[in-house]
Structures are given as structure tokens and as C-alpha cells.
Image (cartoon, rainbow, N blue to C red; front, side, top):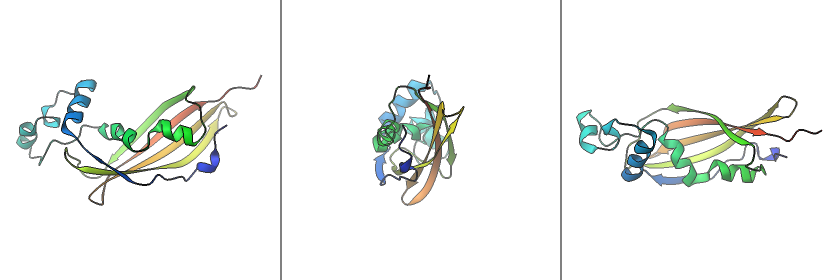
Length: 149
């Protein structure tokens, strides 16, 4: 049973430095071939002060802060039957290699569908650099609940 008393729970902010090597590995893993994400010369040629982050890279740094698995543990949800249903990013300002990103996450809401067979947990994450909001994401986690016989 999901601990719904945790709706509104917010993590304490933590900081993650964006490392060039990790961004390059991420690009290799997803098949990103735009060199501006890992080559400072290619980034400079496009007018960037440093390599920008590829789309969705901020998801990768969530695990260093307070991962979705840690959130499931907090909510007393066994990982069996849990799916990352969707995640939407709103980008407010550029983030670059070398930036220190401050993250905080909040359990926004939990709701059920299909007579309780499915529960949805919505988690918002805020990303800041030097005190400025640079992005926000909304993640929906699907929990398949055991059905009573």
C-alpha cells in the first residue's frame, strides 16, 4: 500500500556538478552524434560558452540526488510492478558542462485508475544553477497494484 501521507514531501536541495566525461558517456549511450554536447570547440563554434547538456540529461543527475527508487522506498512501494510512465521537461535557461545544478524533488500527487488496479505517482523536480531556475520536470510513475481475487 502506497504511503499517501508523503504527498507534498520535498527533498532537501543537493548539488551536482555536471561532468564533461559523464555527458559524453550519456551521448554515446543514447546515440547522440551532435559534437557540441561533448566537444568544447564544436560548442564554441555554435556560440555556446561551454558544452550544453543534451535533452533529458538532467534525468541522469536525479539519481545522484534522490532517485525514483529512493522515492518508492519512502512511499513504501515495492519496485516490482513499477514503471516510469512518462517525464516532461520544461527548460527555462541553458545548462552547460561545468555548471553546478541544485536539485529538489517533490511528491506532487498520487491518484488511482481502474478501480485501484493502477496508481500514479507524480513527482516534480526543480533544477537551479546559481540560484536561477533552469528547468523543471514532471515525472509520472505507474504502480501496478495486486488485484484482489
